[in-house]
Every structure is written in structure tokens, then in C-alpha cells.
Image (cartoon, rainbow, N blue to C red):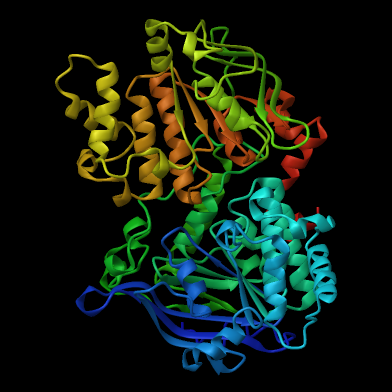
Length: 626
């Protein structure tokens, strides 16, 4: 096997009009002097005109820093070395003025969160106008600009002309991303870098945005570099893929080939960690540990510390990226030996199925009866209906799912259950106690309810005090319900071990932990009061797919060992398939369908449920056209 030259990768796409971007030996570092830390090491990448290229990997792999280096927008204190050639011109040698002329018109970037791209005090049309004015030969009269702005909005599916006069905060997340895309494309770039463009969106809006990007890329003949941690999204969008891990490329190849036969254990791990929509597995395959810093694995295979097939030679030196077939390369030195074992592991994971669901418990822990929640609305109607006569129940030792898009009312219901909101009408009982108004509860009833129900939020970092240690956070929770107990430190250590963390983590602060570790701490805090039920509000949507699998397995283990019930709130149907026994579908504040999870997902009756099922990403291009 021979080391791969970047020109060889993708050379089979001879129909392309030429190389737009050619990156060789890109190394990104942070710090100066002796305190230099590697972020990306010796990365080669190529993108041709009209070609869609994917860069996939977990958080911390260096994807976003790679994207920013391509347009010379690295943060202060971060620098890059190596060659970045845009249409044959070396980007590093360009002056600031020359680079500014390329940024937006040659290479444009669409970020994950449109709020970071759109000025909150600038009207949407103004964002597009600024991109238009930056180009020579564009219309500059007020009437011409207005007409061009209208055309650009229409191109991204916005037909309402009033959106041009709206502010970003007045729009939904999907609409903001459309405006951001219109502003980015107003420069008519050769290459669009899309950095997790749909991660912050619910599943139906995600599909709309991805389909729009794919359509515009094809119609414009534009190059696309898609950065994502979701392999299914990458497979549906991209022709060629780079798998990045701890700052190193571990596999490169045709998207179809990688999906059908991954040639690196890390790529296989990502594929296996994706929860399937069509069946429930007895256990979700997951990779142990988390992504290390590039410096920690600089002298060995970066994935070796987490790899099931690692041997001593994998730790002896860092393996190069070498050709293993037409247009395919891998940085695994054992791939020829373990390829059949990897195939067997994938086949075994797909047959590990658990179908049987126990009977619904007659002992209801939570009962919600015709709950309506109204909020004041600044609009003409005066009130916004967040929930409309919602009824559901959760039995003891049962997992119940609540699914729907952003704005459907899921989180509002969760907040009503734990006393953070008060229903306008309707009743809520928790373990027999009427909690429709937490303010009216006696001290004893309030204490009983707090011990019965706890909540885990989507973002563990915002729910954990950043200035306190993990141990102090857990001790605070324990002290509220363990009066007179003196060994709270021991109890905190026990909680950490219960959620799969070492007791030594008690001395760390949240900022020192990974996203998955922080979520484990949040779960440990919820367990401190020994609750009967935990409300899980999008608890894995902010996590990488491999960490997501770890947390979902943890939830299942805790239920088996402690008999905990869950109300699991999510917009990801593949996730709820693995976690819940029954399912409620919420649409615009109303329950439109409910029943056993398999029945609802396999035989959806309501049109909205069918739309949710169809929006779950699939690893083929036909998904975007369906």
C-alpha cells in the first residue's frame, strides 16, 4: 500500500470542471512557544467544481477549525501551516484585501447557528444587501436592490416579501437559516462551506434545509464542503467523504463505498452508533471513552486507545493514510487483517434486536388531563396557545416518549410537570398528588413531589453551575434530601460511579468535562433524590452520535436497575425507538397520535407523524427527494 497524494483522491471524478480547492499538509495549532497544541495535523483535502465533499467526525475532531482555516478566519492565537490553494492561488500569500475579495464571492461559509451569522439589530434584507453591494457590477439603486433581495429570498424558498423587513429574532430557526443561506449565496460563491448547517434544527426543518442546499448546489454547479457529525446526512448529500478524528484524517473515499464497507474501525464505530429507526436493539453499539486531544495521540494511531482491534504496533507510531482501493484510503495498519471481523461486527449489531415490550403499568406515576397553556402574545391575537387539552400518562417503570417539532409544546409540558410553568387549564397528578399549581402545595407534598420527579435538560453545561465542582453540585442535591447524613462525599462518589464516571471527577468543574460527561453528571444529580420518574428534555440532541449511544444505554441500564420511569422528549424518532415503550405525537400543542412505539412508527396514521418518519435522515440521496 502506498501513501496517498491529495491529487489522487477524487481523481476519478474527471467530469468535474476543475479543482476549486486543493489543501495539502494543513496543520492547525493553538498557542505560542512551548505551549503550542495541535488541533489538526497534516490534512490533505480536495474539492472540485460541482462536487459535494463531506468532512465527518465527532466534536473535538477539528472539523470547524479546518473550515475556518480555509477562509482565514481562525480565532486569535490559532494559526495554520501548509498549502491552501483556491483555483490555483495560495490563500496564505494573499493580502487581507485580496482575501476579503475571495471570502463570500469565492468561498462562502454557512454556520450551524444562524444567530451567529445574522446581526440581531439588522433587518434580514439588509444582510443580503450587504453581500450584493460587495460585488462589482451588482445593482446599486434602491429599486434594483429591493428586486434582487426579493429574488434571493425566493431562491431559498421564502415567498413572503415582508421577511426582508423582519429582524432575525422574529423568525423561526428554519426561516433564519434560509435567510442566512440567501445572504451567503448572494455573493455567488464557487464553494459553499456548510458547517453543521442543520444540527440546531428539528428533523423536518433539517430535511428542508439540506434538500435546499443540495438543490442550489446542483443548479449553480457550486462546490460544497459539508461538515457534520451525522454520517446519514453526509451519505445523502456528499459524493466523497473525509473522516476526521482527533485532528487526523483516518479514512477517505466514495460515500457509497464508506457506507457499505468502512475501512477504518472509527468509521465503523460511527456507523454502528447510529440508532436505527426500523427496530429496537437490545443494546446500542457505542465506542468507549471520548475524542482525545491531538497532542495526546500524536505518536500513535489516534483511535488506538478506543479501538477494539488495537494491538501494540498500533501504539508504536502514527500510521499514514494509504491507498486501499480505487479512490479510497485508510490510516489503519491492520485493515487487511481485521476487515472480515469488522464485517461480522456490523452484521452482529444489526441482528441484536429486542422486540418485546412489557405490559403498561396500571400504577400511574404521572397523569395529565386536558392541560391547556396560554402565553401572552405581542401579536394581534393577544394569546399564544402552547398546549391545547393535552392528556397523557406514564406508568411505574415505564418509558413514554413525547415527539414533535420545535414549537410543538414539548418543553412547555415538561416545565408544567416540574413546576416551572403553571397550566392555564387542566389538571396534573404526580404519584397521586395534584400539582396543577405548585404554589398551592403543602411543604410535605412539595417535598414528596420533588423526590418523585426530576428533569434532565438538553444542554448540561447551562444546567450545571460552572464555578462549582462536580462533587459540590452533587452534594448540594444530596443535602436537600439526605438530612443528617454525614457521608455525602461518599454518596456523591457512588452517584458518579452509578452513571459510569470515576469518583475522582468530583474534583473537576463542568468546563473540564466533555459533553457526554457533563450529561452524565446532570443525570447523577437527578438521581440524587432517588426519583421515581425523570423527565428527559432532548437529553442527547446536543451530543455526538457515539456519546449519544452511551447515554441512551445508560438510561436503559438505570431503568433496569432502579425501576425508574421516563418521559422522554425528543424530535428524533430513531432515538425514541430505542428508549420508549409508548409514544405521543405533539403537533402545534395538540396530541395527534399515540400508541405503542412500534405501531406509531411503523404504521403512522396521522399525516404529521408520517412526515416526521419520512424526515429521519437515511444514508442515500433519494431521502432528500422523498
